[in-house]
Length: 155
Ligand SMILES: *[C@@H]1O[C@H](CO)[C@@H](O)[C@H](O)[C@H]1NC(C)=O
Ligand SMILES: *[C@@H]1O[C@H](CO)[C@@H](O)[C@H](O)[C@H]1NC(C)=O
Image 1: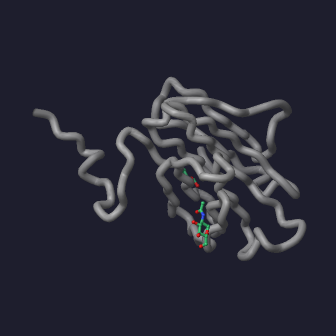
Image 2 (image 1 turned 135 degrees about the vertical axis):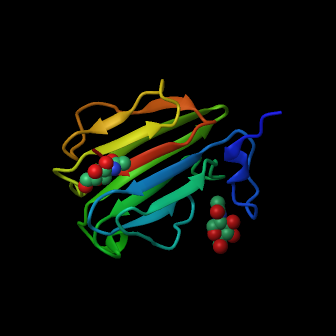
């Protein structure tokens, strides 16, 4: 019998949906960033220092459907007019997860590489080599069983 290491590392307190992965943000930048998880409601801000990660299990918001992880460099950036936001949005759709990356109010990570990638290597990545969104739609869809991670200041 083969036990899955992954299942052993799930937090015991959360009611994990079977076969649904996590949306993750890993901050590899030297500067601290701030993250809000946004659906119908907006979470309290999460502070991510260099090397820190945020994760939430994929879910559907009962009203907005999709959910968004909004990131700013300044503290309180979500509530400060004109501060650039980088938005990792996802939409759980049955067995699939749709994911997208976008910027509003400017480009917070200009000059830095941003990558959104599934743990399933055959899924398409979103890569912004210089932190600036390319023209055209970036939306990808992949299996919802595997985590999808946004890495800030990737290699
Ligand atoms: C949003 O917050 C309100 C008030 O705390 C709560 O009653 C509601 O269930 C929340 N909705 C979602 C979709 O999380
Ligand atoms: C994070 O950045 C450092 C250089 O600053 C690099 O060596 C490392 O591989 C990066 N990690 C990832 C996951 O991109």
